Structure formats: C-alpha cells, structure tokens
Image (cartoon, rainbow, N blue to C red; front, side):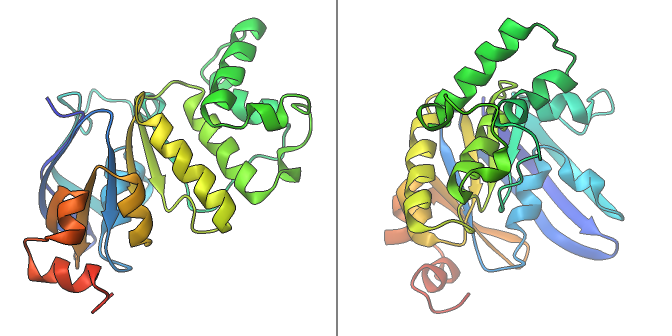
Length: 250
C-alpha cells in the first residue's frame, strides 16, 4: 500500500481547472520532488495532502486522496486531526513571536497536552531531528525571531515534527535561504526520510536531483511524468520533460 495516493484527482478554482486528473502513488519513507514552471499546479497538488486547499474560496476537488489507504476527503475526517499526521513547512520561515521552546511546543499545547516533562522531551526530540538542538539548547528561552533565516526554517521543521506526523510536506523550503543554510536543510531531508515520508516542491532542479528518490514533473496542471529521479533527469520518457530539465522552457 502506498503511504499517499492520488486517485483521479482534479482541482478547480471556480471555473478554472488547476489540476487535470492525476493518478500517483507515493511510497513511505521516500522523498518525492514536485518540479515544473511557476503556476503548473505543483503547490496545489502538495496542499491536497493536508487539505490546505479547503481554505481557498471556490476550490473544488474531485477524486480520492488517500493516506494509509483512507480517503482524507471523507466526511468523517477532521482536517485538524489530519494536519497532526501531515506536517507542513512553508517557503519562508514563519516562527511565532515566542521563545524557541514555545515555538516547538505550540502544536503540543494546542492539542491539549499539559504535562511539562512530556512537552520538554518532545521539544528536545524535535530539535534533535531538525539538527538544531546543539545550536539552541542553551538559549531555548530566547525569541525565535532572533535566529538566522536557516535556523528559523529548521525551527519550523522542528515545530512540524513535534506532534509526530508521519508525512512532511515542504513547499520550496530553501528558496529564501543562503547556500549554506540550503545545504543544511537538504542534509536534514536526507536524514529525516528514514522516519518520515517527505514531499517537496522545488524550483531548483539540482536540489530535486540531490534530495529526492522520485520526481514528478508538472506542466499546465498536468502530471506529465513521474519516475525515479535519475530517470527523470537522465532519460525522461516524455519530450516535455526532456525540454524542461534541459532548460529549454520554464
């Protein structure tokens, strides 16, 4: 069984079709990169998996989106509960104006957890997972806003991991970062895939080549090709994919 699966999924914004029917399965404990030019539908597709498109007016979705075989658009599914299982990291770091500790503890607290020892353990574990613990362990009460951009993004990853999701969605997580911070996030992604299923939107094809096991190429709302990353970049089956990865359009 796939960890995540889209079955004949279409997305409309009003009368505008943002995604043509998509059939795609994502294996557990892998990194899947979504690539394609701006406006091709890759972020819309990513947001299907935690129902973030629900927050957009006039958005209509047909087909099925499965997590561990269960349709997450079924009426019985609570989107808030779903988002505990499917974490999200956005393009720009968005730490809350709170301490480093309270940023990571935030999701635990809103889920009603009050046990201080339990919260402290989960915060430390999440900061270890996000490769930030050694840098902040002595300054946990410091404002998260004082961290560097790269540290803030790793803090946002820790915040997503603290509630122990099984899937991590990343929407261009390094596009606002310098090369050194980008390299740290990419190294982190490689380490995290042993515990999480990761889906990443990236405009950077070199990054897709470095971090992902499989790559999906989107163009004009269509899933053009989905294959092992090596095949996509060295021997794509479709001419449109070949033209995009060689820089002839996009």
